Length: 105
Ligand SMILES: [Zn+2]
Image 1 (cartoon, rainbow, N blue to C red):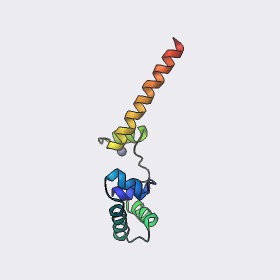
Image 2 (cartoon, helix red, strand yellow):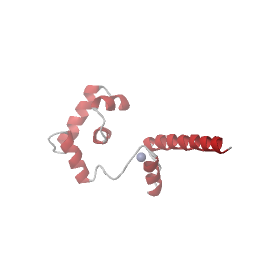
Image 3 (cartoon, rainbow, N blue to C red):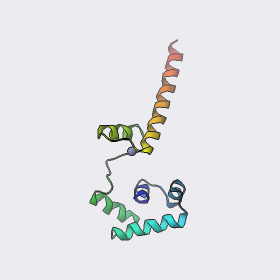
Image 4 (cartoon, rainbow, N blue to C red):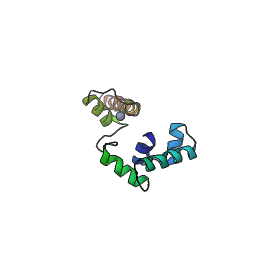
């Protein structure tokens, strides 16, 4: 599922292997099994089938403030990616406040 959603969000097998601490070849193997399981011809087709089956929700976004807010809205604990994005967002807001204080003082 992580390989499928990673590929759906545009990550290469190489990038995913690094993120998931898999070897490159086992990441590709997982990808091939996902393709087989979904009865798809290739990864692009597998992503499309997964969306049709509701396994991947194209409206859900992760890894930023909007994703974080969406988790909260659904009453869920935000996932790690969204927490990370939210922390970066808050750091940015804090920095922006410091700048505006400095310029108005
Ligand atoms: Zn999330």
